[in-house]
Image (cartoon, rainbow, N blue to C red; front, side, top):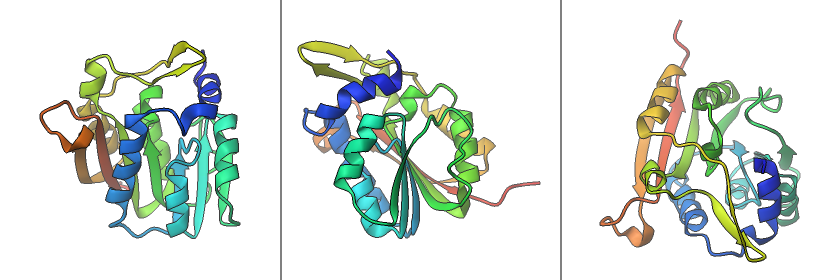
Amino acid sequence: MKIDQAYDLWAEIYDTNVNKTRDLEKHAAQTILAKYEFSSVLDLGCGTGKNSTWLSARAKKLLGVDFSQKMLQLAREKINGTHVGFLQADINKPWRFSEKKFDLVSCSLVLEHIKNLNFIFEQTRRALQIGGKFYLCELHPFKQYAGIKARFMRDGSLFELETHTHHITDYLAAAGKQHFKLLQLQEWFDDSNRSNLPRLIAFVFERTKDEN
């Protein structure tokens, strides 16, 4: 099943089913991004608006982008405002929606479905102003090594989505190629219990001036 089709199927129950990864990432995003100033936001993989609601309350402009039309429909129903827009797009292809520069790109629980990290970092650099921030939070690769992946139950059936494992060094290498500066790296644990595998890994990168 294609990713957009899977998330269309997941959309109706996404906000209400038990999902520790979704809930912890929402907390992580608000905790981490509270320290940064931003006025224009590109919310990649915005889904049903998990983070868009909070981000749009702090920003003068927000564009939410997602694979899934049904996820976007729910986001539009939640969030009103002339400064907020939503767009269906495949971020594996060149971004036609980033002609104007943003000062924050937020991307959460998306890149496990993306094979080519380098392309995403390249497009993000193009979308950001110099000094702009790239917040990235994903299922921790340690969880992936243990066999955990995006999945959901619907009508008694289990749906597992196609995923790709990205190692911590993969994120750092992709960032380095695009001249991003690492500002923050943080692991997030269920119930803050550090004796277990971390569930999430989060990064904040800053776009620096391109080198010649």
